[in-house]
Image 1 (cartoon, rainbow, N blue to C red):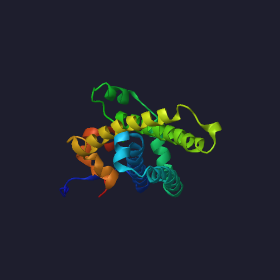
Image 2 (spheres, one colour; image 1 turned 30 degrees about the vertical axis):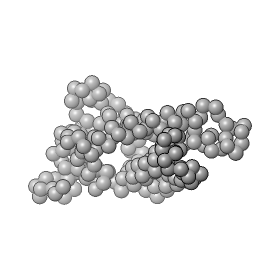
Image 3 (cartoon, helix red, strand yellow; image 1 turned 45 degrees about the vertical axis):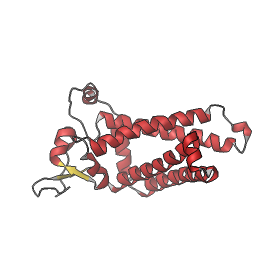
Image 4 (tube, helix red, strand yellow; image 1 turned 90 degrees about the horizontal axis):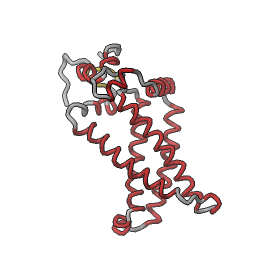
Length: 207
């Protein structure tokens, strides 16, 4: 979408932040697709080739972990630490926003903070249960009875969370401009003042 010449842009996400997001997102969709094909009988029967799907699932998980580590090590770690500090703090405006009072928000609103925290928790649990599923096939002493059940439920939870995320970023008219921040790194100042007023009031325009 073209931006009018008099509309100012505010830098929102750095290259490191965007790389971290897209590494996670791309791996997630491959893992979700291969996971659904492995564990839903109808899809498993339709696709077939279960050993290949299992290899894709495992090696994508490994590539995801390595890629995340590389982005963190080679990227702007100071910016990522600042993000983490901002996300872990919930002030009165965040609580008011959750109560739908329209309180002004910082660079991340309360919903985005919760989404990041839940996503990080799910990623950790996916990794933990996935490890025990993989290693448990090779050493039965590490085979946990409920690891597969937990892994499957995490998949279902993630599926519905990502549907909501896609709706807000691609469909919902009021919020879909946020996609510009994670693709091009900037958002319009007028949009930021409406949705992230506390941050927009302090941000410097990218002229």
